[in-house]
Amino acid sequence: MQPGRDNDGIRIEGSATVIAGAMAAGAGARAEGTTNYTAGPVPADLEELRAALDSLVEQLRASPAGISDPDALAGVAFSAREEARKERPNKHILDGLLHALMAGVGNSAALANAVVAIQHAVSVLL
Image (tube, rainbow, N blue to C red):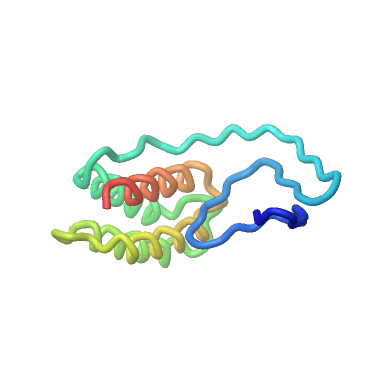
């Protein structure tokens, strides 16, 4: 925030991911909440990242409850898996595919946790 400007909101820009139980901004704003959010195990290397994507593809192919159009999401996960299998995976392509997956699996805590862990690994490893 620039000096002399009022705090009149929350700005989220770029490739940010926000997971929050409560957010507030502005004069007199107050937010209370409790969030228990845990990402799955974060892949430690490229091979573990590839294995995590393999697992995600299989989970989506099993048509999990609460997921709209799991076949389409499995296709997106498959594309991410194929990108990760390249000798030099493109971080930007993987980021885009993982953001699309996150939008589709948000109703499933287990799948959302898996995607967040994979996103973290991509940001660290690539």
